[in-house]
Amino acid sequence: MNGASSDEMSQQKGGSQLQSQTDAPIKPGQSPEARLLGFLNHANKGDLEGGRLAQERGESMAVKTYGRQMEVDHMQMLQESEGAAT
Image (cartoon, rainbow, N blue to C red):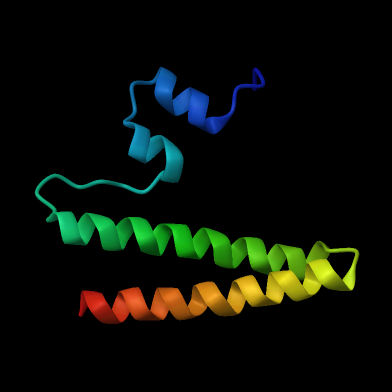
């Protein structure tokens, strides 16, 4: 790898700004609501993973506690957005 971030590489390949920030697929013909919910779900899943990593790898109790709160908050938001989609 040449040291370029994935955002830089996506932009170099002509990817849209939205795709380069999330790597979430944007499908042709999707409604704006479906696109927004897809973006939110993708972002929440990423933050869930970040919270889990903070709990596993955090060295201080404050980091582990923050990671747990991230996981709880983003799991709730993910459930709410999936509920809204149905």
